[in-house]
Image 1 (cartoon, rainbow, N blue to C red):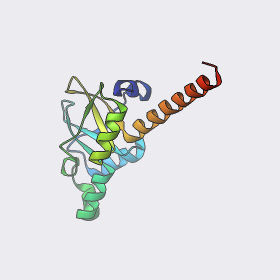
Image 2: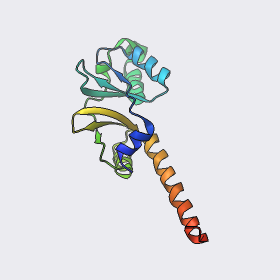
Image 3: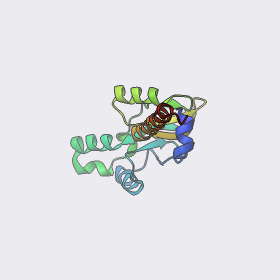
Image 4: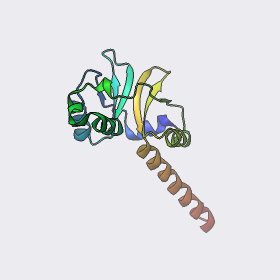
Length: 145
């Protein structure tokens, strides 16, 4: 399954923050949307980073609660690993596992942000695919194919 297919099923919603937003506002956004990361985009809509729960926890560990007044760009990961709509679920699962991150922005034509895929999205699609394959095998074995 490709990233394009996963986005079609999931939808293209992108939750983003500005580099100048406060960590407190980003935390409120994460809580409101019930998500684990936000992409960080500049005024032109270009991807400049990603801010995850892990980034925030590291910031709390280093700065205490004062970090809530810091800006998003002070904690975000600027060297963002991205994928394209042509990448596969298996490829993403491997990259995310090896890189130890759980969210990957999706770029179309290498520049335009078109979505975000989480490890949960990948696992959900993979489980669905395996269930479909299992059902097809059952049908084949029982002669219903």
